[in-house]
Image (cartoon, rainbow, N blue to C red; front, side, top):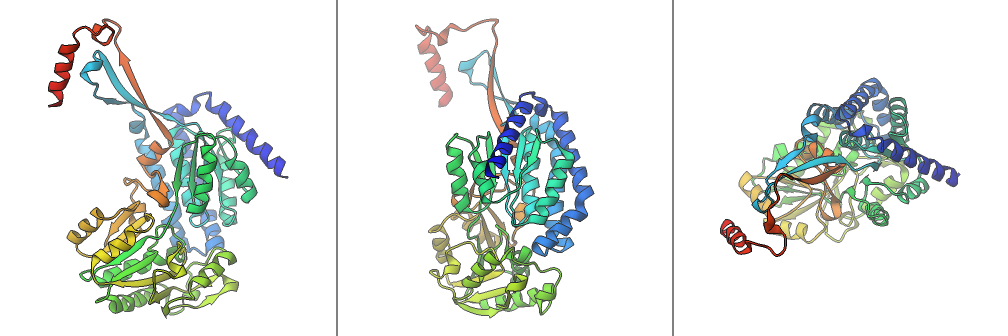
Length: 463
């Protein structure tokens, strides 16, 4: 069985390399046509996509559309409308010393790429990456997570119906398949998942010096200052934390709230949670489920420390964990040692903002940073911290604007995508110098005549 999969993978890579070498994918009209084919397929399969997301993660139609289908459609629309502009050669200035040359940047596809997507947003994270690959002119091998099996199957149906495998192929399987895939040589790897597996991917890529984009995660802080609008903060934090039952890489991972407003914030958050999901979220069609029993058990252990001030109900048979707020958290608790990836919100307090910045800056760089408070304070906090992305007086929205590059920094990821950044991620920016042959200036050749004059001109220019 393993040898059969290995043979299939190697065969697909060979076929894609042969197709890429025909240069058909470099044609801009070809790329736009493929983007349109993918868009039409998504429209056709919309119902099946959202039904699969319900089966895998208990996502309501509305949430599935907003957070998965629509994001991909928006990305497709942007690439279809802008690709001709993005692919144009970019003229750049040429230093006087290089006269009579001109310089430009041309964008060419990297080649055959591997795209690996996780289970939490199985459609959006896979297809959004694919849009960038198509846009740049690459051939792609896609590997969805087996944990969101229903969505993976729908994506396979879409890909096999829409594209030839020598251009785009999707390969299903477990960790053994991952090992086979990661052992091959690609021109680029785009991986979305955990930092732990990201390190495995990077080691595998190093074997062939393959470039990577790693979209990872981490513990994204959410800070509520004393001067924040508490009503708005409570509503937006509760919403952002509980989308997909907290299984969102950019969800607020933990809450740092000024001691003077903590009780009021928690009270308002409880009101907002019940406004969205009712007094028993288990009965709400808008509240998700944990992906599997293994993830459920891990989250259940994280609930053992601290004081649960709201929620805490669980049902393993339904993979249900209620929205849960945990107070009296200490930094050494297990819940503060790893990304939560669930509907648990640990709460810590502060008196001075410097306490928060010291805490955050001493740890791995987060994927997101959220601050609720006055704009002047926010600018200072952004200046004194770092993260892959950030929101002021909101959460999650940095992923929804395709004009913003999205990605991590340090332990939370390498590289950016979305919009033009996706096109660039899958492209090689090739610098080209073109020099006239009508005349040839002697000053660059030994014995370097007129050197003193040229040097004086260069020195004058730099002053």
